[in-house]
Length: 544
Image (tube, rainbow, N blue to C red; front, side):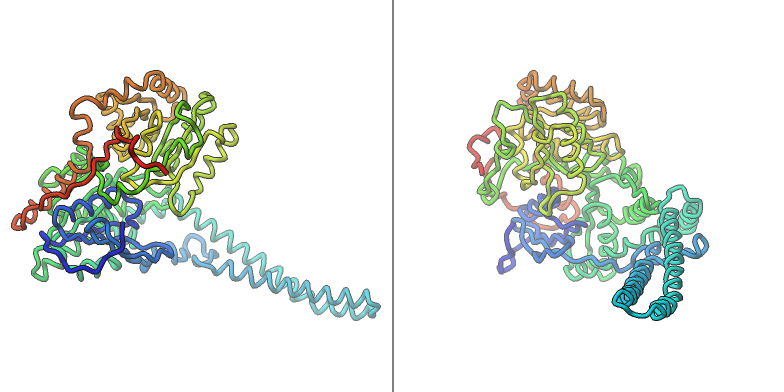
């Protein structure tokens, strides 16, 4: 990525505005899509979200421009400011009221304590007894009044906490009744009541998209679908024929909802159902998900499948960036068994099984390539504590992310790549990014028995499958791979195994979608020459 240069606009096939509800930096699919579309001759402007104090709000990915905007919380959910008098009439209105009252009373108590100390010091200095008694009498009423207020505020604070717990209870009758009522009254439009925070994306992105006047809007994932659909309708009402592509990264009904918010997942499902019919074309990450989307939304055609595969070729800029040596970072030699995991960590990713397994593999090490630029997440500290409790902390290595185009080369020196995810609806549907990254690193895999990846692994033979969350079966799979790694690596030599698992092949599918929607545009220009990134040549890669 480089700063945006001041250059004259070059001829393009049309303007594509990509929308994404994140900061772009950590989203390899979005970055690759923007770069490839620009290389195919489209003018690409990728709009994402500016978070924190990051001052870098504009840059380029290849010939694609990135713009980050702030998304303010303009319409918070009613639960954040509504009192709920029927449930807990003594509860405070959500906000800092209770804390402010408590701090005021603490200040008054400290002041009374100070005045009482003055009286005691005067008495010890030889002052008359009656002066001490009179002083204490003057402070008695304020003291007991302050104490009574303390009890009253603590009572109301407890009521507020109980209200919050009740509001977060997914089995609360009142919340379930309200949910069913809004769904019955408004159908798919009910998301406006169930999660009005979705409007924040519309209010932030909508004016930006309108001003850019795109020929095609590429909406990444479900939150941007609604933004893209509304922008498309506004443009058409103004006489411009804008096309909308929905890039569905996951199956929304399969998302694990927020356990403390009964309304969140139904709101997202309704939001997608309302806006899906406005998409002129749909693309997604797997054939299984494509089938689900077509059936769920009664789509007129099968969504195009664009896998989130790594690039087979690197740009000169990417090639110039040195690839770190994963074994050197772990402080181990080539003969030490190294198990690697890449990607985000949460409880459903099952990474803890890799740490527990080390207690029965005394020579092995585990590398978790999971630390973002802004530092470790709380769950990473929990894993470190677990490793310390089990006595394997010296063999667990938490490593920072590397750029997405380096992942395959970075993990290639490992003995095997692990995908230990648990059985969750969306985990069953696709070959995830790290599956392809391990494959292009030509390392064997050990994968839990989630449907799509387990089927692919058994068919290809590049790894072993174990029962999710089963430590004994996980260890069985790891030992089988370590006993004969070359047998599993040989699966990658079979013709056609890796050919379609490249981003270049996926980018052609994406460009075919664009071209079909805008058939009067010029053909794609000849692709620029780039440098192969074949991991088999990794010994020649520069190492930091």
